[in-house]
Every structure is written in structure tokens, then in C-alpha cells.
Image (cartoon, rainbow, N blue to C red; front, side):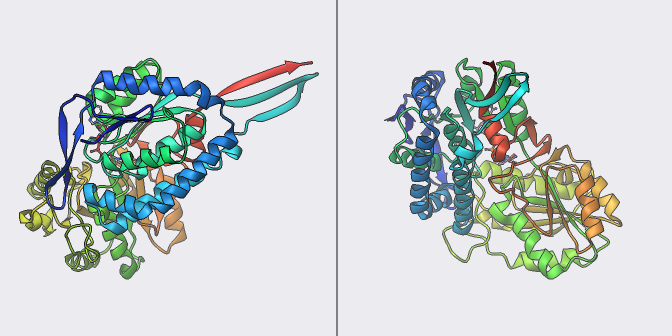
Length: 473
Ligand code: NAD
């Protein structure tokens, strides 16, 4: 069974379990416990017990440990990537990219001596000085999704901990193994017991964290309905919350874009990570172009589907059979609602494991399900407009606003797009507009609930509270 790690001890709770699969074969790799409130209570108690000493540890000591953690992550990067591929299914190259982007956040957290500095204004009034100092918030909890089992936990606890907080991580019950290895390396780096605690589970464990009076902050990443519910519930219990939700990202292709460059970029964006990515470009909007779809189809037919461990594979399996079947049903619904099926990846469903190959729906009606709903699989919807203004208006109909991308050489078009499209992460000739760790991951609209985003200085603000000193001597 996958262990909980609480106060530096491994434990196997007496709880129901769920299987952890290899999605490429359907084989059961392990069992993950569905911890209940009692286990959450133990994890929070361990974090509370560790907080008073940890929060008084010098910033330099925290950073020294964080540098050691970083070195261990670098040394174990290949092992972590293999683990991600094994229980998530993405290709090894995609897993390596995930680990690298996770380590980027640890690099950023190592800048704590600069990031945690306050501000001073001497002589703000006659003989009066004013200072702003940052303090940790207390115990923070992290609830990541299944699709980045290493990177998204690393969005959360390194920054929280370097700010002086202690942490309870509740990994995704579908991909819990990456977090266990991260916690082991974190302990090996020398962080004291209780600074990071791991409790496995699903909704019951999340609810216990959201309601726990000694949890001060919640970092959540997952689907939109759960993000909205987590935001409401945690806020009702007086916590600060950052809740990142789902996405439906648009890629606008202008008539001047060079198809040789654009086609592989769109395929990588739509089908990378088997489309299970909150920055997947899942709707391509062709502006006055008849050539785009034939070019996409020809190139997509050449993509190889198979286990992520095989080096020549481009598209791995989906996470679970039920999810794969939902994606297949959404493809069928897209056709029923008027889309033209150009490439049908459902022919891969007969393989062992949870596969569905790259799928392209063309002439997708703007109000249809395939244009509106996050499918979270390797399905690219294409729609057509005559002008950039119409493309922007179509993208802006979405309730979600994570990312929007334009391909063009026209600076005026790029600027108009950047200014008017309602999404928080914009790419110009960049297919996956993921901000680096020192900038915030800035979803808009229903892709994000909260005020302060993950990582970047937003992350530092989220995991610290400010205290003002005014003094006259
Ligand atoms: P999910 O919402 O099913 O689960 C996310 C986390 O919430 C898991 O840890 C899970 O155990 C927990 N959870 C699930 N249902 C719950 C409930 N009813 N109450 C309380 N907790 C619950 O999401 P997922 O399927 O694991 O991940 C995929 C989703 O995450 C997609 O929608 C994707 O777009 C989104 N995502 C968003 C971002 C972003 O940065 N905006 C990044 C990655 C993934």
C-alpha cells in the first residue's frame, strides 16, 4: 500500500483503498489508502507541532535545506520522470519536462533571502519609522490533480516551507507515487519531521482539510467544479485559498502564419500529455485558412500512440478507462452536434490499457459541447472565422480563461489579441504559454478562484502575511 508520511513516520491507515494503475497496460501497480478525518487530524497535528520551531528557523537555514533538496531532485530527476510515466502514462520526454518545470520552482524558492524581504520607510512622520515584515501563515495544505504528479506538488510545498510554513499534502488518489518520492527526498535533504506531511485520500480527506481550524491556507489545482467548491468551502472556514480550475484554451491561426511551424506546434499543444493538460490548446480557430485542417490531419496521422516508456511514442494513454470512455463519448457527441470527424482516435481503444489516439473535429459549431467543454483528452476541435475580431470574440465566449495563443507575423494582430483576449496566459507563436516559476500561473475567469496565483511573487504573498511596525524613539 502507498504509505502516508506523517511527522516523519510512514504509516498505513486502516482505510478503504483504490488501485493505482499503469495506464499503458491496465495493470494494478499498488493500492492507495482513502484516509479519513482521523488521518488528516494526525497530519495537521504533526504540522502544527513542527510549526513553532520551523517558523523560527533562520531563512538561511531553510534555504540551505532547500538547496540540498534541489540537488537531490536533480540527482533523481530521471527516476522521478520514470515514476511519472509509469503511473501517469505520459511519455518519458514529457515526464522529464514536468520534473524540470517542478525543479524550476525549487530554484525560485531558493531565492527566499530576497523574496522574503520586507520594506522600510524611516521618518514616515516626525521621528516615526514604519516597517513591513513578512510572517508565515501557519499550516498550509496542498491538493494537486492527477496530471502532473511531480510538478504540481512542487508548485506548492517548497515555496510554502521556505516562507516558514509547515505543510500537509494530499496527492491525487490517481497518481500518488510522485509525491511519496518527493517527500522521501525532502526528508533526506534534512528538513525536520512534520514540516511536510503526506496524507493520501480523496474527497473525505479534502473536506477534513478545508474545515480544519488549524489549516490556514489551501492551494488547490483540479477541475473547475471542484475548484469552485473548494474555494467556497475553504473561504467559509476563514482560510486563504488559491483554487486553479479547468481550461478550454484557444489557438488562433492567422492567414500569414507559416503552416510548417504552426502544425507541429498545434499538435504538440493539443495532443502532448495526451491532451490531459490545463494548457492544452484544445480549440484551433482558423482565420481565413483552408489549408490548416488538411495539414493538421496529415501530420496527426503520423503521430505514434503507445506506452510512454517507448522512445518513439508521441501520445501515451489516458489516466483511467472511465475517463477514456468519457472522452470517446464527447467525440461522438461532437459529431452528433454537427462537427466533421477528420481523424478518429477511437480506433486505438482496442489496445490494452486506456488509449485513445489523436482526434480532430472540424467545423465545430461555436456553441456545441466540443467548443465549450474541457474534454481533457487528445481531441482538437477546429472552427473557422473570417477575421481576427471574430476569433477573439469566439475565444471570449468561453467561461474559462487559462491560456490563449496566436500564430502570426503581424505585430498589430498580436498586440490586438494580447490586449483583448480574456485569458491570463497568452502565447504569441508559443503553443503552450506556461509562465516560468518566477512569474505567476495566471488563469482568469472560471479557470481560477482566488486572488494570489501559484508561484512567482504571488506565491510568496500567498504563503506569507504582513505585519506592520510603526515606532517612535
Ligand atoms: P479533480 O478536480 O478531479 O481532482 C483534483 C483534486 O481534488 C484531487 O486531489 C482529488 O482528490 C480532489 N477531489 C476530487 N473531487 C473532489 C471533491 N468532490 N471534493 C473535494 N476534493 C475533490 O481534477 P483531476 O481530474 O485530478 O485533474 C484534472 C483537472 O485539473 C482538469 O480540469 C485540469 O484542467 C485541471 N488542472 C488545472 C490546472 C491549472 O493550473 N489551472 C493545472 C492542472 C490541472
